[in-house]
Length: 144
Image (cartoon, rainbow, N blue to C red; front, side):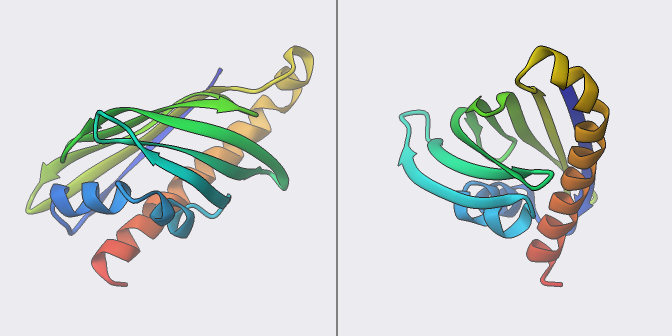
């Protein structure tokens, strides 16, 4: 399993951050590697399920997300299946008049032998991707 996480402080309320992250098309705006979000459907828990395409180092990977936790304004958590399987989520907490957002992901790379070879490279790529996503989220919400 590959596990990556990062956090950032944003000058916006937890409610504003949660609301922004609650719109799937916004993830395409802030996550450089997401090239497509489609088939968005509401769930009974208030969350959503959707299909996505993610460029994992230049290789397109299709997948499906089902939101398992929709806890305004504190947390979004998703189960991921398809080309990558695992979980990802955003935790939002109030700090100093703004918010701290923690983005975490844990997933399996398909193929036992090849995954051992490429896992360190994929981990570094996705750490960079999380950092960029959080910086873009901050810029969107702070109007930069």
